[in-house]
Length: 193
Image 1 (tube, rainbow, N blue to C red):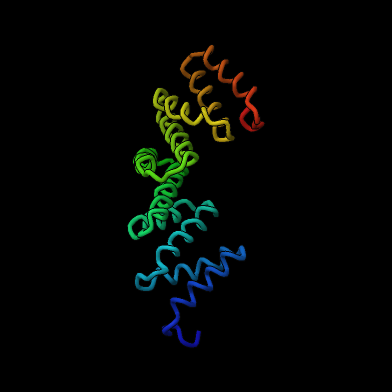
Image 2: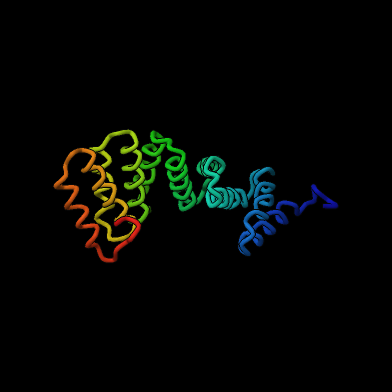
């Protein structure tokens, strides 16, 4: 505070923010990370942008999370951080109902060869939800059916959505079959039964 433009201000802000974040004080970490990205680009910029994105997303501030995930996409040097920026933007756009951008970032994540199976399942689920909100039931069903093959909670949600789509399309027999599959699924997920 005595030397706001001191030679180690970048290091001090970054490491203080990291300590705050690691000890569960994300709100206190925000100011440090914001100070880091306000200074010239450095070796800490990429990590600070990632942490800011995560903090805002965890606070359900999807608009701000989107800003920092987008900046991370522009500055990421590490492929893992680039993938995180794509996934983060996809999730934010989904939460903000920006369906066209959900489709855009779905393609980017699915085109990333290091994206894991869980991530790909989430992408298909979010893409299906976006298609459903646009009343494109055929595409929605196609997308959620991919995730529905998974025996996880995400798969259960996808089966529930698939059954709902079949119901909305008047395919009651297929809807009933999906509901029975969902109720017999092991492990079961009460939220989706």
